[in-house]
Length: 193
Ligand code: HEC
Ligand code: HEC
Image 1 (cartoon, protein in one colour):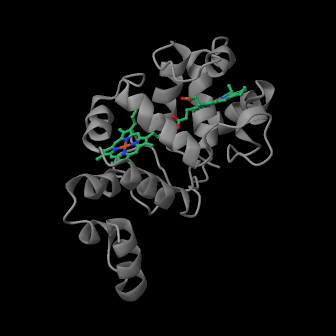
Image 2 (spheres, helix red, strand yellow):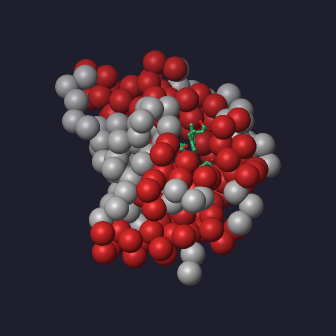
């Protein structure tokens, strides 16, 4: 039986914490320290993974391995996790958690961001609340309820072509006409969803 299965059993019977249950596997323990399952990551630059699309996450792990995504922390982590079966189990686990949720806010940028989100047809691929649902294409990630600092970093990288993960350049094309201020407004909106 794998460690994830042990964890699930332990949680079922004893309600233990994830980090305790994975204490013997340094890499797995680390995943849950940075990407927690309580909808609250220790640092807003770390993306939430709970409820995230499974295929998307596996694709991104590969993008770190091949250097298509430049984050050196995640590159080291992805390269050190050589057990593909274990990786699929971790990703399955994150993806099966209740989906990430945002925090309501009175920030005036939220309204501007919402208008831009629909005006630029981001909903075509990411869904009405950034939570997918019936979308025009498959393969897009959940972005509603994600940390705005992380979203901002990701969008600037995508706009500037520093994250060549999307083979058709669909994301870059949607972003080229947007200023950094407009992108920031969109991320504030998404963080409330
Ligand atoms: C030290 C903190 C840290 C640890 C440990 C860590 N991550 Fe990450 N992870 C990050 C950060 C920061 C990013 C954002 C990278 C970027 O900006 O490109 C990220 C991004 C990701 C993404 C892409 C998410 C998205 O929305 O595109 C996945 C998937 C992921 N991590 C999975 C894992 C898994 C699986 C593990 C354990 C094997 C792990 N991470 C361990 C910090 C961490
Ligand atoms: C034609 C479909 C499509 C449209 C339109 C689109 N996206 Fe995306 N988006 C994607 C795909 C596919 C990805 C995954 C790219 C990758 O593989 O890294 C993505 C990735 C992202 C990410 C990175 C998420 C993460 O966890 O790292 C953000 C943020 C995002 N899109 C926001 C937007 C916004 C804002 C708009 C509107 C301005 C938009 N997208 C329009 C398909 C689309």
